Length: 164
Length: 164
DNA sequence: TATTGTTATACTCTATAACTATA
DNA sequence: TATAGTTATAGAGTATAACAATA
Image (spheres, protein in one colour):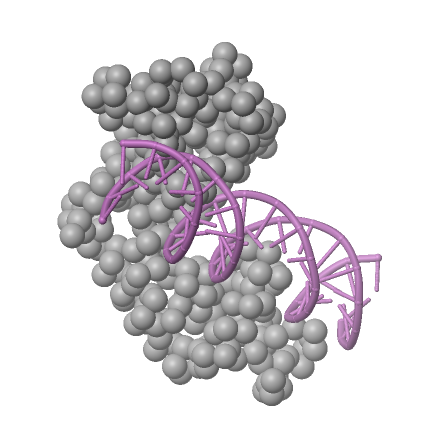
């Protein structure tokens, strides 16, 4: 591809200032995305010792909270497509953390049941997650935390005026 | 794989209640992730008419704000690896929104320059993004918005006590 | 020896269509 | 005909190693 070859200095050479993302910083979503990246890394580090990823951890915790859950219900709850849960459930079952029990009521469905080890691992992983989040948010007041959670829920539920 | 076949009812059959993600809702990061998913969908819908994705939009806006920027600087600013920007820059250049100018000062580097069309498209896409975010956050007070942005920045910068 | 942009590669996450076995 | 779980597949996003040209 043909390219110009003029003597255009880089921003650094021109001003000595670091480049800025001022326009992007005007959007709330940009800040949320960057913060989410940090929180995701914290979570990954906290649960990696238990052999869990974000999705397998989330699925395990929900199954522990809701023994007997079917996979379709779990998918709805975690807002993921059913096919994407199959490998996650396979993984958790292979690790001995949950079991797929066949139900007599509906022989198409499985009742997802946590094992004793699954319940234990979920508790330990959640505690690690809690500790990591507490460290990351050590400087956060209870009021600010409440505001953030309330706003995030408002966004998620479409209560900001954008629900169509 | 062998599976049990007992008559374990699903949660719905057992209680008539919907399954809950109560434990996960105790984590701030869970709410941020779910809200981010909504905001990301809003952004994608807003800039899709301009042929832009989140990354190409972000790169374009930063280049418009910082003409002459090098690719490595852009990567640092957007917190992505250099190789992942190549296709993004190729795409923006192919659409005629930016140009890779060779610099005489450092012949390894390109100075990324927006075209007139790129400047125009960036402005229009940002306006669409702004409108979408305004709709989504219509019920959000200025105070709450400020809190959210302040907390997200604190998280991103590691000012919560977790900066090691 | 280090850096810029690049290629190749791979792994994760996510989404859709279609299959099977049941209902 | 509709649903539960599954398979196959494909698209994005993201990460690392290594290369050629240049510093």
